[in-house]
Image: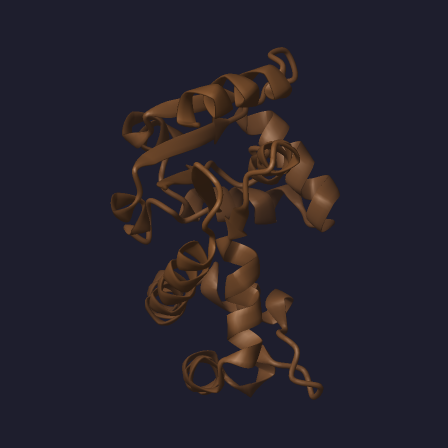
Length: 193
């Protein structure tokens, strides 16, 4: 079974593309979503995050205070790197277990914004990058996350440049509103199965 990664900059449309693959019967491991689950359910990871960022990282009910964590790590590169060094290994282990549980499909997808930054793309058979123009991405994230342009640009600045994601990918899906996402996904689906 092939293991295929899918990445792209914030607001590029990775999730939309993954939903199209899922409609074709392909299972998708959403690494960022699983990271959030692990950051609340994995006691060792919770303790390490509190030690690194502080008790304000969690609300009293134990849920993740994402806004607080983002306000800390997106202003402090060292804290971001330390947080990633805690979360990425836990997600990688979880992803391997998930992959092993899939059995009757020709391939699976692992979706992650930081697939390249974490180095986990190297363990996959292929890498797809979803690309969209920067201004389109900014407007999508402002609308989706209800944050300012400055906050979106700060997050973009923390990710590796788009040209690097494109350079490392074997396949690129263009999400500029002009090319059909469904047709691009179907073409890759035929190739991978």
